[in-house]
Length: 173
Length: 340
Image (cartoon, rainbow over all chains, first blue to last red; front, side, top):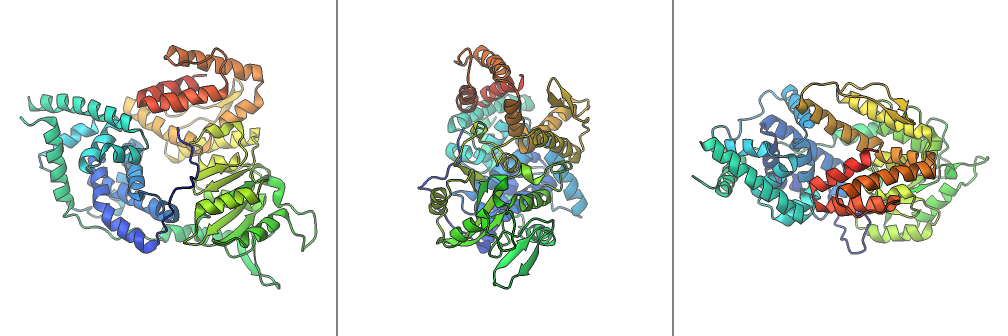
């Protein structure tokens, strides 16, 4: 448990709207990738990614001052992506809004089965795997993005690998 | 056969390659912010007085208490005071305590704007903010919410330094909220729950919890579930506490999805309020009996807990020991708390 006291040594970095655009352009693709791996649907992933960026923009005076606003957006996306309710509602909204939604991603690529197996993992394990492999995050960065300890990240990663090893080898036979 | 590690790395490389060709849509706009600002504008009429300061009125009979135009963004720092602080006995030019605080803070360096909201204005803003959730504000009155002084900082201001100044200048403040974090100045027992939402922070912000607040917070959960399309019964008192049934779906997957939504709704609207109300309305003997049962459950799960634990002791075990141990431990410890 961590109290959100304001410490004397935290640095305040002021970022304006122009910087939000830079942040958005830099982070959109990786955040979309994270949502895609966790939802398996491009339309839902695009909707959830945009939802997260909209939330960031609404609170940008605060989010922009965080040490790692990218971690904040990833936490929002990874939590909403593994919530079946939010995922389905994002998909429904996207279908209403979009005429197309762009070309499907991953279709036919050898990674499809791997990500399907990841989505069958327990929620937290799937989030850790997605951040670790897709984002290339280290354990400390994964821990910060999900608000858990590094030790938990290690445990989830080990369990996820064991699950996946069995799932993927079963799939091959 | 590739090993799992290699399969994951190859899949990630392929995904990144495909993502590189995805066109980036235009960034989200300020449309949502403008909508909120528009709603606020409807609720507030701005008038210029003969003495050249801006006064705001909520249009619902609450008295004007703000000096300086409020920027079109949430306040950087919100200082909470007791509900009655903004009240003025009589007189058109009477200066309330809130006005005095606003004047005092306006002179500090690093501050762009300051406004004081009496409890009536607070209720208006609160009602707008939670208008989408049926029942979330319906029966609340201004007595249920704190007065506040809202502070907007200049772009290069040091939020920590300003917060420290506010703590020193305003010893009567109950809480200081910085963004969504909060710096406590007076700690009621429920504040060890650090996951408290903004909604509950405001309802409990005057350091009082009433049965009406408890009932409204449960009604808000019911509204929240209903908004999510989940069937929910009317809440009724059962063994001294409100209870309701929700869901009614068949598959395990649907039940899990409903539970996840329920957890979000209770975290947003009622968990801390319900605990605070329970604590305030039950005798020490009854409360200790509940804590004893929670303690026995935690001991059974391997934690060292005394026979008659205090709330702080249970909080430490659940929110520090179990919380930092693993997700499974956290879930098991929370089960103990929620079972009684």
